[in-house]
Amino acid sequence: MHKRYWNNYQKEIAEDHYFYARSCIRQTFFSGSETAFLKMMTDELGKDIFDDSRQHTCTGIGYHSDIIPLETISTVIARLFSLMTEMGYENFVPSCITSFGILTEITELWHHRPDLLEKTRELLYKATKREFNVPKNIAHPCDIIYKFREDLKKNMKYQLVNKDTGEPLKIVEHIGCHYAKAFPDRGVGGAEFPHVLVGMIESWGGSVIDYPERRHCCGFGFRNYLVQANRGYSLSNSNKKLESMAPYEPDFIVANCPGCTMFLDRWQYTVAEMEGITYDKHGHGIPVLTYEEMAGLLLGYNPWELGLQIHQIQCEPLLDKIGIAYSPEDKYKDAYGKQLFPPQKPNNLIV
Image (cartoon, rainbow, N blue to C red):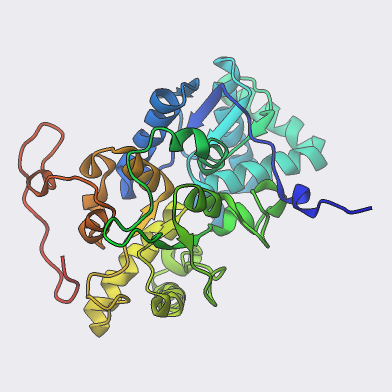
């Protein structure tokens, strides 16, 4: 009997009624992405998603840096789940890939270690007088956009297509380790065939580049960057990926992890300043987008409200290639329309 192996690489993604947990580092690095996701969920898809002002960090970076012990992070996660429970939700959506990995790890531990779950309930109640239910479904926002990619496509004003040539844009997709590698069965496509970004790209008109270091780590790795003496290792990892993809001349990179997006963007500036090297032949660098930014641009959202001006590699050449309208004069205005001082230009990257 023929076995449908692809079924083994699927995951259950809830249809509606989500409790949303923001990311501490995403709000710093890519401030428009979470707002764009919530807008897509409510305005484009008509979904019920709750954004709780009482939420807090998952402490994942501290945990992976051996600062936060297991019982502490287990209790912190339990408080997040208690907020979800209090508001009557069962489907938890963590914005950050690290949080997604942490939630998966802790709930998996609770499944295999009922004693830890019971201890966590005791600690949470003792500290806060709160109780919680374990979510029925944990899905990352990229899972949800992937699930509803065809519904979003109906509202899109643009495609991942070069407006002058009519050819699909050539795109590098990068999957965060804590999404596909730590718990392969919790991500679409697993570790071997992660499809969550590929599905978006292909549905929206683009083509995916396969290159030798496609599944290589971005280089973040927490200790690689948090410990200053290790930062050269972080830079070397990103450089290895960027050198490998450069001959294929990608139009941009899209990632589903805030750390990966940040490092693949920022390290390009670093290498350009240190070595005078850019990874594209025009000297602009290769733009790096979050998946929300990619979707938001195609839906016609304002690039500056999405926060593209915050990226180190500027995106105007990509916007021009797709034909997306934007106002150069508004790029460095604040939310009230006041003109801010533009940042200092780099020495080697063309901006």
